[in-house]
Structures are given as C-alpha cells and as structure tokens.
Amino acid sequence: MSADGIWQILAGFEDLGHQPLSIVMLLIGSVLIYLGIGRKLEPLLLVPIGTGIMIANLPLGEAVIPATGQQTGGFLYYFYEYGLFNGLIPLLIFLCLGALTDFEPLLSSPRMFLLGAAAQVGIFVALISTLALGLIPMFGFGLKEAASVAIIGGAEGPTTIYVAAKMQQAGADPAIFAAVVVACYSYMALVPIIQPPIIRLLTTRKERLVRMPYSERPVSRTAKIVFPIVSIVVAGLFIPKAAPLIGMFMFGNLLRESGVVERLATTAQNELMNIVTILLGITVGSTMLAGSFFNLKTIAVFVLGIVAFGAATAAGLLLGKAMYFLSRGKVNPMIGASGVSAVPMSARVVQKMASKEDPGNFLLMHAMGPNVAGAIGAAVAGGVLLAMV
Image (cartoon, rainbow, N blue to C red; front, side):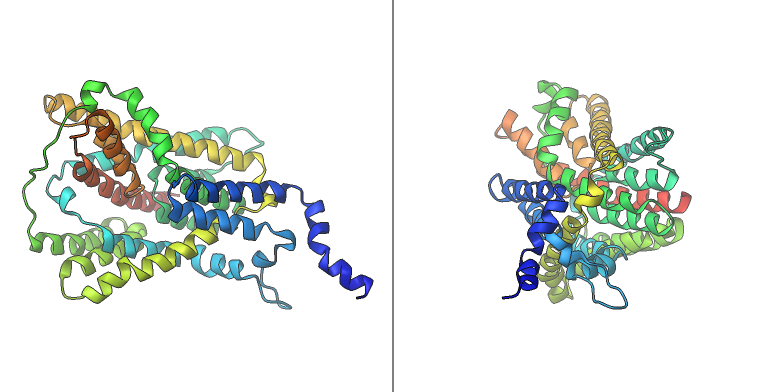
C-alpha cells in the first residue's frame, strides 16, 4: 500500500487532532445515549439525538457535508435541509401527535385551557430576557433571535423547530437555530429532573395531597369531531401563521375521532410516528457540531432555555394555586405544571409526584387537560411570534 493510501486511512485521526472539541461532542453524545438507555430518561429522544451527535462529529464530517455542484452532500445534510429546516418533519410530528391525543380531558373541563395558556408566560419571559441580553454587544441578539429562543418556553419540540427555522429564513443568526432546537429537546427529555424542584418550591404538601376524583361530564362523539374542525378554521382566520401547525395537529386528531379511517389513524399513531421520531432525533443531534456549538451565544441559549422552562412551570403552578384557593381546596395546583406542553412528560411528572405523596392519588387524567392545552397554546404563541416579528 502506498504512503498516500495509508494517509487516507489515517485521515480521520489527523482531522480529530485538528478538531479536539469533536472529542467532547462524542462524549456528550455518549452521555445522552447512556441517559436514554441506562437511566431510561426519554430514550425515544435521547438515543437518536445522542447517536446523531456522534455521527455528525466523526472525523471529516462525512455525514453532514453540504451538497455542492461537484459533490453530493452527506445523508444528514439532506435530512436537515429537506426534513427539519423546511418544516416537514415538525408538521408530520404534529400530525402524529394529533392522532395520539385524546381531547376529552380538556373538553370535559374547559378551564384547563387557562392552565395551558398560563404556561406560555415562559415564552414571553424568555423573549424579554433575550432582548435584554442582546443589549450586550458580545451577544448581539436581535428580535428574530429573541423570538427563536423564546419559543423554547413552549416546551413543544415541533413548534420550536418550525418557528426557529422561519426566523432563520427571515434573517436570524443561523447558529441560533441549532442551539435552540437542541436546547428544547434536551430540556424536554429532562423534564422529570427540571420540574419536581420547582413544584416542591411553589406548593405545600397539603396542596400536593389534594385528590381530584375524575368524574367530569362525558364528551359526545359529535363534540370530539367538531372540535378539530372548528380549531382549524379559527386558526386559519385569527392566527394564519399558526395554521400549518394547528391544522396538522387537528387533522391527526380528526383521523382518530372520525372512526371511519382507522387504518390512517393507526398508521399515524404507530408506523409514521416511529419513522419521523427516528428522523427527527438523529437530525436534531446532527445540528450539534463542535465548530459551532462551543461559543457564548450557544451557552446563552441554553441558559435562557432553562429560564423559559422554569418560568413556564412556575406560571402554570401559580395559576393552579389560584384555582386551589378559588375552589376551596378542590384543585390540586400541581396540574398547572403540566401546562408546559412536553406531551405527555410533564403530565407524567405530576402523576409521579402525586403518587409519591399519596399512592392512592391519581391526577394523570386531570394533568392531561392542561398538557394538551399547552401544546395548542405553544402553537398559537408560535404563530403570534411569526406574525409580529
């Protein structure tokens, strides 16, 4: 074998020597995979994301090379360019989520819309915080960058990707998109770690022990069918920028509730959801490139993201406490935390904490109401940001 051939084989080691931060990214990818497999922390998200990080940061970056006139791009480049950045994968995820969502807990108790709306406060806290940080020259965040970061507070991954991509297309700093997407999905996966301390801080044990027997009024099949149709029309008329997200979400739900397209509903709930989850996770991970990830702006996005998550959780809890007092102790304020979308992770956190305080307390169905409302609220807030910025 010639010397040139040997050097070609060893080129990966040489490139790794020139890009030592790639080693750090490989370690980060390994940690996320460990958390997904070893600790069972949202493996459907962390395993694909961790794998995507590792593949994208391998020497020479063959998987993420952009396409040029002389060569084709890496396969992750095409996933990113034609699946993530143009909004296709987020919209398909919303379709699948709609097919998986039961709106009955929300429709049977419409007041839960308020808790979902309250949690969107996190978006506007993050917006103001990012604009304030942008006054420091080294960060230089403008309104478009602030809107991209703010949407993390909705804790709704597809909405975050959709809005951040639109902001980049409108002129936002391209480095922000990758940081925002990774921050959002990382924090969504870590909801079981982030939310419990905030819930314990803002609620008393007496409040956490409140039982809410599930005896809400039944919702007719007609109401379940009419709701997604009306939602599509209302979104199109009042919040056109949110219409693609809400439209696909409600279309998926209509497949579920219509009862006449079972094959389509089943496909959206299973095969299609699994496919787009794989593509989403590995593509999100591929945006975490060492060359662009380790900088002040990225660190700021991650800090602002946790502020947004914390503010959203706190706002939902505070409104939950208000409902607790107004109802004279009949509403458990913990369900306000599930207004932070992250469906169904935040609802599961509430149920787990309720069970820990009182093994006989079942809040999951109550928590799913604000949880679903939070998903709708995040899409609406995203549409408002797109319309205003």
